[in-house]
Length: 327
Image (cartoon, rainbow, N blue to C red; front, side, top):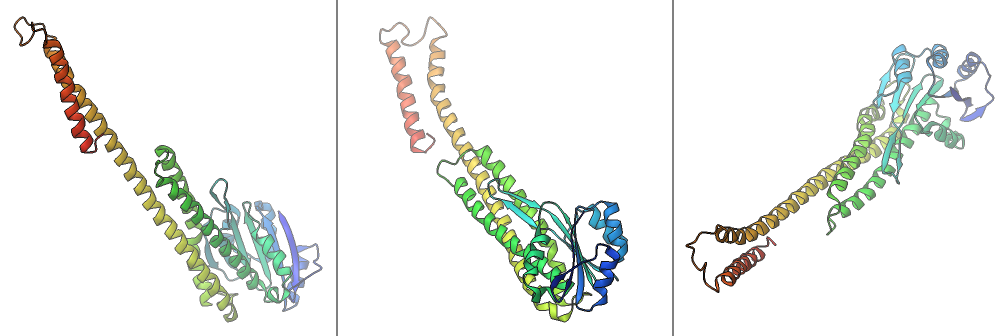
């Protein structure tokens, strides 16, 4: 559905006709005006009227309706089509949630299509209406402001992920070692959140480089410094994501190594106790065969001697295993 529709002249919101055709005609009548329409998860029927009025390309319309798109930038004769993925981070659940925001900009219009819970476009609209000098640069200023807000959120989320990852690292290398199965599942779950983060940031690099290069329509030479700044922030977010992923892999490898070492320690202890139990068992087994002619069988000291032999052998083995660190 359409959540907001307004005409901006010299960066200031003006009275907008109710009819979409009249509003577009009014925006195109003045060189310093444009119309900005915001939609949230529109149906095909709802979006068809907007697409027809603004002459949007059918392929771009299909992408905007279906969602589940990678961040990208596509140029058409009538509009520039950009897809970005705003992210949010739930610190309590340590979960990254991605939404999608499609932005069409043309000669005198901006159309934003939101899928998901993020309200990036609405927040940007609210901030820019307080800064008419920025909004006065036209539709490309809206695209810049949206990209800048999305990428700034990436940096904040990367910092929050780093803090949580340091806490997880402390749990893995704690002296107690923690619950191995629980820690492994936590590490894998965290790795999936980092993957979600990287799926949003990495593909956006190419569109930002193109916008920063000033080689796309509707983005003039004067916009290059602004998009270069966004591209620089995005590169930092990508580096942070790569660093988080590498550190998670190292933490997982270290955790699995710890588990293997603990299992080896357990096996050595079990083997040592089994060896100490085997000698008395062997001696008792021999004397339990009840042959008539066995050494010391009829001696009064035979029974205590056998017990003493068992104890002595077990004591020697225990000392040896203890010295080698098996016990």
